[in-house]
Length: 236
Image 1: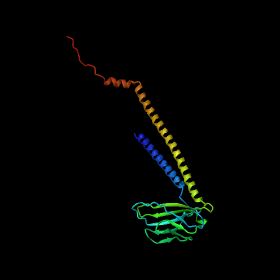
Image 2: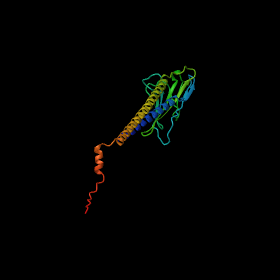
Image 3: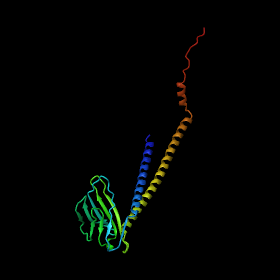
């Protein structure tokens, strides 16, 4: 009685697991595509001022708390970014993070920043962060500063992230393939087992139907049959 329910539950579990792995694989691939997506670039020459735009998307009706700018570190695995400046919105005071040694400021009343008198060490990826109130989602945007007369900025950390995402995607795809193979094997095994049980039940039914009647069975039939007439005929 419970065997079909067990098979049904097992199949449902495997289908849910299969869909979960498929969804996870899709998420990883989407993240990988997002990382691979080209970051907007600002090209300048060393010694010039460079304006980096903040393209973080504003959600209508949301009053964001602050705007913050970071430089994404590309070599140190211990820290993902270095803070440059922050300002409370809409018209708070601009404050600089501790350790900032270069001249950086917000452009007028915008969220863009200007790096004055750029050097080769300024090349790299910068992040604009809009801090949202509780219940809303923070917004980020990235921009890459390229100094045309300087060597290409190292991108070890970003490439490492790409490799990690690619590796995670491959692992999930392998797990997806293995789970699919397991699902097929288990389904076939359950189908064969169910088929074998049906054959055994059919064999038992045929055995009992074709089994010759024993004397005691015949005796029961005779006993249960019509009773002989007990009518007595008298001759005169």
